[in-house]
Length: 418
Image (tube, rainbow, N blue to C red; front, side, top):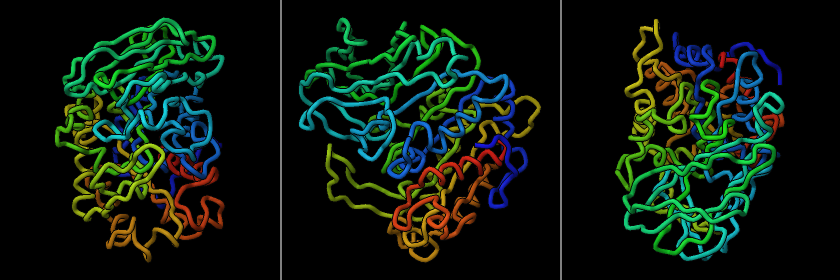
């Protein structure tokens, strides 16, 4: 992919929108967060979601720049074929247990699995290769950190091993809180596999995401600077779930606001407004290996705008703007990414996600939201109209981008100066 791009005419760039990102990347100490659903996850039509989706393409471009180092990555448990069989590439999360031992539930940062009966090898995470190859300390990450949900009423220990070694434990408090388990001194010279093993039903827990780091003892082991990437992408994940604030089991806004860990808030935040973001589930949308009947409603436009606003405000809450900026609203650089959809499915004519409101209504909401929040925006639909399939960006009957479509979106985002 080329390294320099002209700003796209279908992108908007309010003055100062990139202050936080420019300051952070200039000091080589920044976090890039991607929020989204299957489009950001490069699901279904992309041949390698870990390398050829537009978020990993952006990551590759950023890390290839002179003077830039890698600080780490965080992958939610949705990066698994157990979550979506159509995900292609070498996925870090996998699951060995039988379907009867697992259920899909939704109180975490994205729908997740939990153990409901005792079962060996509930799930496992295999460390991906370091993105900088020979420029990294070792070919593979040397440490990891797993965020888990400790459900109310749980007891006992989370059991795990590293590379099939001795069983280790982490105590559960049953307090309904999110917490971490750190795995230090991984192999480094080869991939390491963290196996979450047999869990009695009373000690069920929910893995949320796994972060990997170049140093041997987690984020504290260095490098002290670099770029960290958080991949918050789940297929079928509605904006409603990303922005829950009902304290069931925890107010996600607390974590988006905290800024204490790079997994939860960035200097550059890319929000992909794929079709699933407009869904509103009235019940859990997934059980293992099946898609039950569920009621899906298109967000009323006002609620759609309010949820976007809530997420943006949480990202910027309590974080000062970069020195010299003078713009209190620019503590975090926000980008709305709207991929092109084929006119036969989602368009100005056919509507959006089955909602009575037409697609242009949501494009207008995104446009006005970007101006109101001093955020940048790329409108892929305006760029290619209904000709995405003719350009080989997508098929005529599927909203999910193909490889060329992901490359197109990466180029448009880089055209903003990212």
